[in-house]
Length: 349
Ligand code: PHE
Image (cartoon, rainbow, N blue to C red; front, side, top):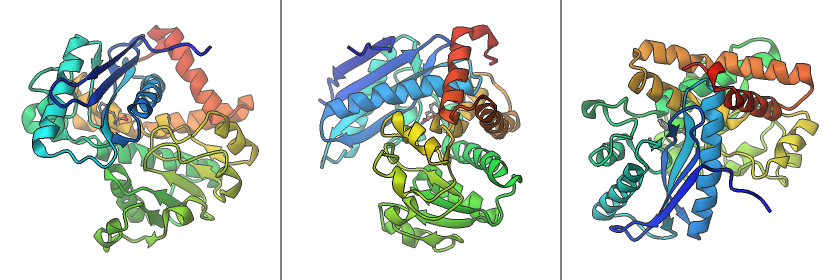
């Protein structure tokens, strides 16, 4: 039998919205659990629960490896497929989420994630103080996507150094899957650096929106299996399945999408194919690092940026450690997270 490795999972039917509200608190060993609020469509609410369980565990690892004194959690509201949220329904959902978070009494704080915005955080903030990334005029640090994109850029520099011996991305062939709020920003940063860039999104309308971007548009399938140096998953999770691995033609994979591996075994399959997979929770930590540095530790935006850019060193160390110890980067990262969780004093702030 598998065991529940979460401290607490709250599941309730939102009294206003009638929708399943799930708050998974994975760990508070290092401090208050943090993790975004995902409003997403699921065929079955139990799929939303599975997502919340996995994503919250990922947040624990994300905070631990980033050296943050916080644990991991996640909120998921499972919207039935085909349903649209009008303004009144959205408000009802956010009020339901806020009450669920308030009932946890500070054990967990939320932030934006797929399907939510800083404005939504301001709405949640009307009912509970345990929320990050409200717009600046509401006292928060605002959109976390620019910091997540910047942190990903840092991770890509470290990955590129591992492949080519230089952190410069000019001429490096990259394939970006997903042009959401993080992916889009990242595409512009990479193009500015002179990367040789393929971009894709399931939504063809994104193509027109990107007329100014110096990149080649391809289909998501082409992007996934393109002959490139680094594949950059920036869409929803589960992209890397056991079936897809034999078709990949990249040398490394590093991107901000959470939960990229469909199963844990995929990390080993990639390793056996000689493809370096940089764990998603290390790559994508920029948003949460920025929000906590500014809002919790009251540091300046410059200091926060420095901490986000330090992801480059984290990834460099991780890839070196994996090499020396002859383990996958996934194993090296998991061990580092475990070490920090076992000896919380070693974690910095
Ligand atoms: N969506 C963010 C992530 O996956 C979560 C987050 C960002 C939480 C900022 C709090 C503050 O890392």
